[in-house]
Length: 134
Image 1 (cartoon, one colour):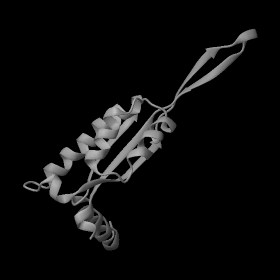
Image 2 (cartoon, one colour; image 1 turned 60 degrees about the vertical axis):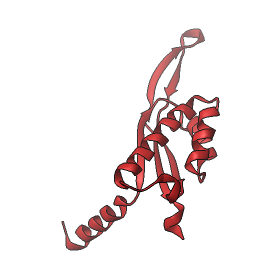
Image 3 (cartoon, rainbow, N blue to C red; image 1 turned 90 degrees about the vertical axis):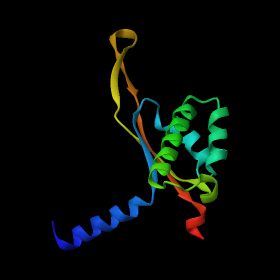
């Protein structure tokens, strides 16, 4: 590994130490349905986002709620002794990318076959603190 590449990798590693995030890979929901819920909580305070997800009737909201709680636990483990109320945590980023696609065959009339694509997605949720930005 070259010197510049090594320095860049170390800088990224230091930058990631201050960021709390959680990932959900191969979630068996289509990315389009997950993005509908992710767009609702993007930029919201953590408490408000948890309430939104708790009372949202969509199936994807339960998965995102669990992911948000995991990101909060990661933040607590990185910032021992700090209180969440003082740091004013909010949902900084939510990215929903398409994951693996399972391809199945559905019988169709007159001897034909239609392809069914069972989609999955990868979700990355990043928490930020409003006190650090100021």
